[in-house]
Length: 290
Image 1 (tube, rainbow, N blue to C red):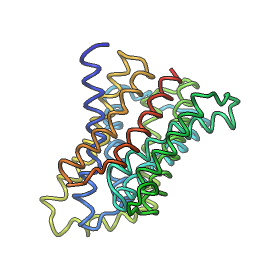
Image 2: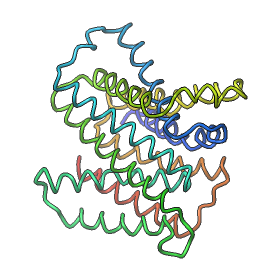
Image 3: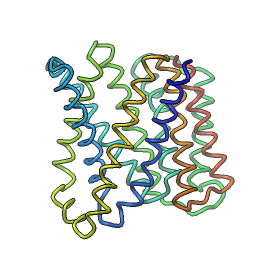
């Protein structure tokens, strides 16, 4: 494995892991999870448009059936990010990110129910330790207080993320160019945001402190979408996708460490064990799928 590819995966994971910091900075100004998802989608869309317009305008071409798939992936991305950000607000960064990373478990369940994959002992074990981990993270085991709404939205982000992954895999199997797929996916995600997020409120939210909020919003798009995507895409040119997805598990670890270091979140022993169990189950499943 080339060191440059490894460093790109680490950089992408750290970039994705900074989401909690931006949510914490922007929420006091009245920006909602839908607003922040729209900003993130729009930043990615604009960067993709610039690339396609400069490098290869032929990437705009797409069939009708493929366009439907990108609509689904755009909707799934918007659902993932919105539920993820809202879960952060209601619970904590560490809880939200680890619940989003239950996605491979849901992918496995879909595959068993609808794609005819066998439910092996390893998969059963992964589901069991994931459920135990969720109980520990939530506080159901250990008697800690927890926010049920935050937990539900965290799991919804995992379900949406698993749907996004499945649709992306289908697009790749159909031979759709990844740039084209992401261009239209983020176009639809931005359109959904424009329709649902009440984006006219964004200028009113930031008007009182433009010098602070505008740079933070720009960094939200750059650090959590544009930079991680570019780094991850570069890494995929060198290392297998399965290996890259296994290494991307660094995201919840970086998000948790950043939340402790910069947001003052406390990581108690039992929730920490729960996080370790969930991430272990995800890692085992990702290695099984290579």
